[in-house]
Amino acid sequence: MLNQRQLTLLKFRRHKLAVAAAFLLAGLYIMALFSPFFAPYGKYERNLDYIYCPPQKLGFDRETGLHAKGLRRMVDPVTLNSYYEDAPENNAPLGFFVRGVPYRLWGIFPTDRHLFGVDTGRIPDFKPGDEKRFVYYMAGADKFGCDIWSRIVQGSTISLSVGLVGVFLSFVLGVVIGGISGYCGGVTDTAIQRVIEIINSFPQLPMWLALAAAVPADWSPLETYFAITVTLSLLSWTGLARVVRGKILSLREEDYAVAARLLGAGHGRILFRHLLPAFASHIIVTLTLTVPGMILGETSLSFLGLGLRPPVVSWGVMLQECMNVKAVIDYPWLLSPVLMLVFAVLCFNFVGDGLRDAADPYASK
Image 1 (cartoon, helix red, strand yellow):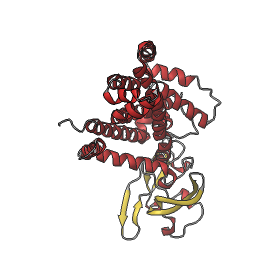
Image 2 (cartoon, helix red, strand yellow; image 1 turned 60 degrees about the vertical axis):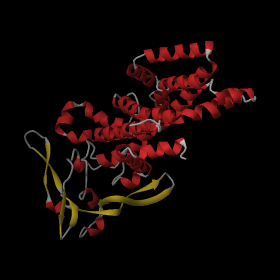
Image 3 (cartoon, one colour; image 1 turned 30 degrees about the vertical axis):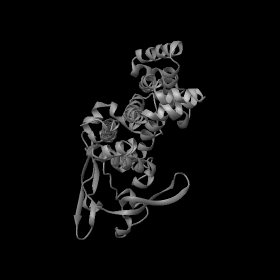
Image 4 (cartoon, helix red, strand yellow; image 1 turned 135 degrees about the vertical axis):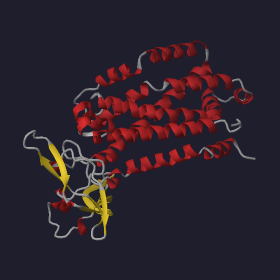
């Protein structure tokens, strides 16, 4: 006889789209965890010879093997606008596990290995300084000549972790406050519900802007990161609190809860040991569907200049360059972080849908 957890897992496995999204999310977080290894270049590494370089095409031949087709920046003498033309002499051979910019993994382990990049060992007569000539910008470069793909990869550490840390804080607030509201009832329940209604009555985006604008501009990146995470959490716990409160109201008079109370169990033990585990799957579903909102919140605040600020690299900070419409029209690859953002949010939504369907394993399809 399968227990509820096993039934839930079995039903979730049948949701092919949710399972695929779960694996893709795992891949995203592994990429974020080892971001310097997956990024061909450093997030602050500049090459002014390739400002606004478009994404480079791949080529293959017997002599060079897999390579990035070389480009050369030219300047129109009349309009002074930059443009790029093919430069076969700058073709850059590519490889896996190549040596590149030195870095410290997690600030501890020094190494210079990258998953892929330009294989300088296969370039004839390579001299120091030629690394500025033989480049590969898979997603193009920005106005400083920084590789956009490398910044996307390393910016995922901030953008994806904000969702997890923010959801953890929302989980603590929602479960504790919602549990107390549903278990105590009476005046306590009424007071807590009125506070929740007041918080929910404020438009979310203006409240985010107001709280984020209160963050001092001279705070360090770490302090700003913490402040933005707390700001998002303070406005996202109310939905979970309502769910927990409703479930506790329906479960607190069940036979096992009454029996535990008659046997002398304390209120905290009854609430957190007996009542909350009874609907843990619903809590997990709610949290999973909350993470995309956290990620979008950080991106929105950083995009508007009220969240994380340079030199911190996140998807929202990268999108600040897109506030100039002309830049977006001329250099559409600057919108690449949007594709990663949409991809991550869709994966979270698919996983949440799968968990929601599997939360009640006894329900028929």
